[in-house]
Every structure is written in structure tokens, then in C-alpha cells.
Image (cartoon, rainbow, N blue to C red; front, side):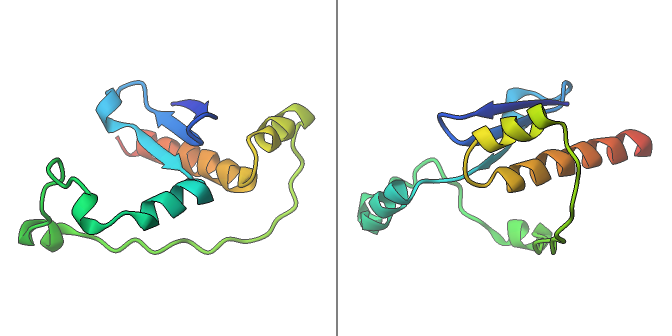
Length: 113
């Protein structure tokens, strides 16, 4: 499993060595300025031509995933690790949680196979 932080796009890219680029999992945030621009768009100005419709088959297979509750903990980390995450900016604790969650999922999947 590889982790790559794209600071320009505020994305954490998590890539399993066996995955292709099309199967990347991405977590991203969006700036308030960008949200404001998007909110100002009229529906008629949006190009939906590359978005397929969600048909009955999609909804039949859809699964509701509710956010997990989080628990505040005290943890000791190496100084350099904590500083790197803090340098990533606002949301660094959520970023740490995402990295840990991905690691746990990868380990669980490794033992299942």
C-alpha cells in the first residue's frame, strides 16, 4: 500500500500495488471559494454528458454507509510524523484517521485471502 499526499489538490492518494490508476481511492477537500463558484452555477450550465444515469440496477445494489463514530484518544507519536501531518493543514487529524483506516483495511484484506 502506498500513500501519496497531493498538497496542490488537497488529496490523499492511497494506492495498492496491484491496483491500476483507475481504481485509486481518493479523499479530498474543497475550498470555500470553489464551493461558492460551484453554488453560483446554473443547472443549465453543467455538462452531464459524461455522467451515466443511476438506473434501477444501481439502486438495487446500492448500500448505505453511515459514518463511523469517532472517539477522542491520547496517543504518542514520533515528532517528525506528527509535524508532517500538521504541515498538511486543516484536517490533519482526519487525514491521520484515513491513513490508519486504509492500513487496517489492507491488513484485514490480506488475511482474508
